[in-house]
Length: 148
Image (cartoon, rainbow, N blue to C red; front, side, top):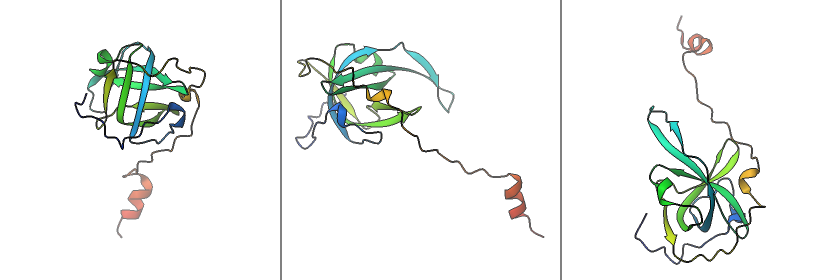
């Protein structure tokens, strides 16, 4: 969490305006529910705790990924202001993230009376761009590099 006050230029958006590649997201959401905490193994074989929280406002809801310490800091029914968050696709579904460069603050009073769970942006499936990794050392590469 950050002690910095959000700047006035940090315009708040509504959940329904989120898109798969939204960046610098400043939003106020209410936590509807949290899933069970699970352990995931990273590329470096470290094990980390992660959970999904369904969050939203009167325009819609979306799943937000919570990692490690943030899992215990954010509870159901809490209203949070996220500053500089982002949206990515996980298995073709939108996820809101606080991220390394984002921050959040728990608000004492909630401006959100009721969350619209009918409009769940995470239910919609998006085509994900494939990330191609160049392969080296294959037969074709060997024939190209071979000198006569």
